[in-house]
Image (cartoon, rainbow, N blue to C red; front, side):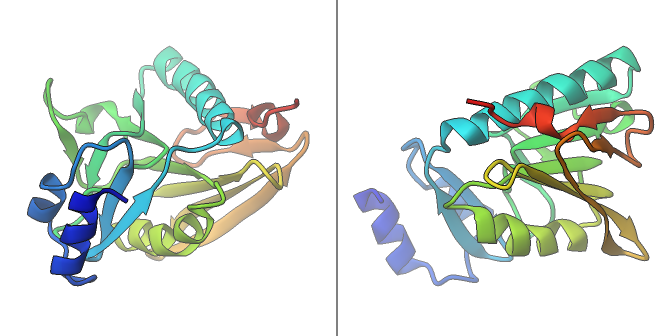
Length: 194
């Protein structure tokens, strides 16, 4: 942690972080997110994480573009879910064409249509609990958690405003999406084989 970050974290209590506080953090290569007023800091991810992110983007973007459904982005890009949960920077997100922000936008305001987080040792519990609750509260219609270590993808969809697990998918099982109907991804294709 840089000296500037350390000073800021001493000055601001967890639970009281604002977007304005975030804007004053240093540009030091770390990923900063504020969820329910709590600051989370992550280091750069490992190769297995990034391999999975690239495969997800490639396969989802190909489907989305072919069907003219919207757009796919990756971190770092700010998503402002609520007043107290901004920014989050999902690993992969899909936004329908009709919700796409104006050219030059610095962030997306609201709930993307699909978010995928790829677990890494430093973000595992955050992605599985803190972000899970934040995305559910913001009513993100679909949330996937990809685990390169277990070679597993969990797909959650909103049902009565709560996430319901559609499946724990591994190996040659096919990932399907309610948001992107017709999308089919073989689970094992998302993970580094070396």
